[in-house]
Length: 112
Image (cartoon, rainbow, N blue to C red; front, side, top):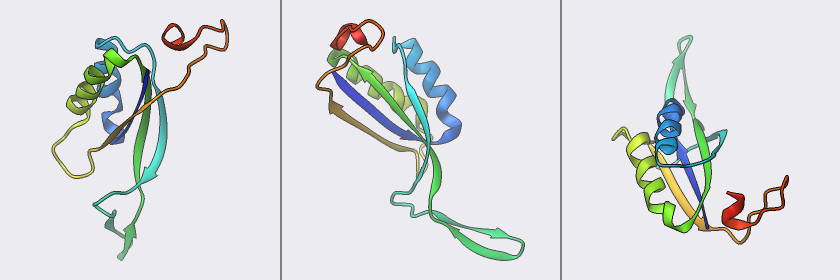
């Protein structure tokens, strides 16, 4: 089992959610976050004063999947979240040691 975490642009959330549903993802967790990468934020003009926006709004998605779903999920996120512009985001994948469904006590792949 793997955990796939993606940090994407907020306006791409619906596209990614729909695309993941099409490849059989049963559930995702989405969190509103702020951050920056290589772009280091940007400057904006407000009431004649220029200021730096260091942390940009992003969406963090977390998806727990079986090992055989990982490639399809990563490719789906890349296609659905990509704009070709700076700040599209990143995808991280790591191993899950154990998953337990609280309601039933099911373990690992059965709990997904």
